[in-house]
Image 1 (spheres, rainbow, N blue to C red):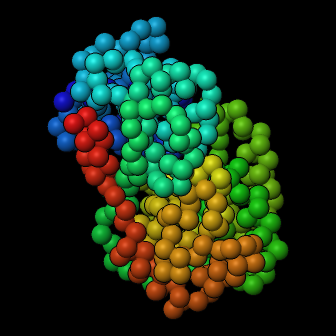
Image 2: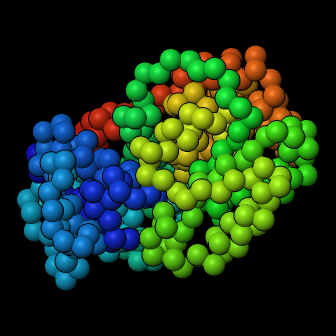
Image 3: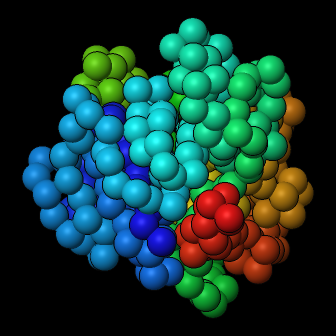
Length: 344
């Protein structure tokens, strides 16, 4: 069938993930479009791309905000923006959201949902619970993100890496807290340990530009902690991030109330990297507590779990093997199939 997808956020297209870091929601949008095309559908994207192009079977074109798209599609996926809802009236409408759903109470969203009645798609149980129950819609569906092929490929078990922790999320989502805990509690217990940080405003386009000052303040704090084993790196495209994750011993990420899926932890787990998190937002859904990592109840439990994984080879091997065996997650082909079913 013909599938139309639309986004009115930052500038990106299907080539972006191959040449630059990209935020989770944008990367998911690209991955779903390409997975639908690979399943034999004709996929048209309307977004803020710089120019028309066709890449991996997906036709991208700049968004025209002055009119309906007009294509007689079987499925239309509006991504995040209320102004996109209902722009292909003949199609089965889907409204795909990535942030906690409480913002949908704003009148402009309520009006668009009432008028067009799309299916609201969320990413998991925690995320679904943030969408007000009374909102009008054409139904609700939970479809988790898929993981890209490089993260799901079979891999042999590895030998324990050196005591290297990794952080690959938004610096504003708990990095300042982690740096304080690292200096005060974790590094003194494991003097050879290093904390490697991959992140920065460039990942988030115009949104990152707007908050660059805040992010850079946290990253400057990280830069000042070299004597405590803190190492900062530029953010990497996801496929290049694989080798960095495979060289890490543990993913340390507190979590955040804004997390609705957390690809950073999901990708680390799929590669066999144990993780330590707290039960904030949806991040705990990515961990099998005590098996592939730890969901720590407080800061002291977080530090203790991090110290254990950095120094105990037996524990690390057990959680590493469990993560490789049990945390590959769904593929984007599986996610695309579930979106297909919404058009039935």
